[in-house]
Image (cartoon, rainbow, N blue to C red; front, side):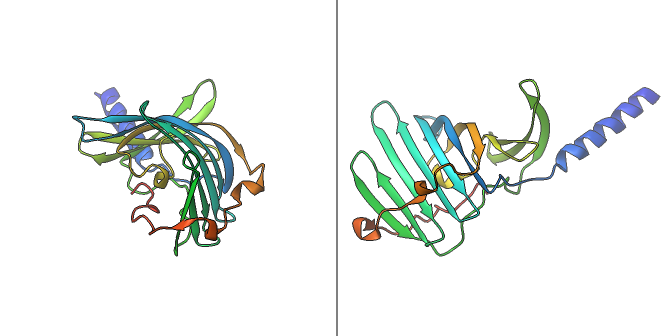
Length: 211
């Protein structure tokens, strides 16, 4: 009986620890690759997209760039998004059509952080010794969302930390790899002249992070 009581106490303490895992934000400057699968649809008629991206993230100077190759095997999207929150402008460049558009933003750049509202978190080891933390969310009925970061440094491992680049997708599986500190080429944030682009209304959900 005493052994059962001790086990129950340990289990309760362990669950309490998991639920109290402290959230974090990624480093202020990093770069790397993202690949994965995205889906649209209502579950009965899903449409899948293969997505490969390179991202340069500079929260210190309020800039980001994402180069995307996306295909559903019927069509291809090759797109560059340059976020210049320091200028209050976001540029979208269609590399296939050779077209450029931009819109204005008034609020600050959203930081890539573990967002509030996760149901529980747990620690685990990836590979031999990479300690990670997984944050699980119940976003929709019967649909769990998970974001994984490294325990030390909060580097992204999987999931979506910058949903504005994938806000039109309902389901997804994104993995991060070759993530390094800093920005190798600061000129990647150079934007086209607004006079060479078409001004468009700001998408309503563009600045949303997972919330």
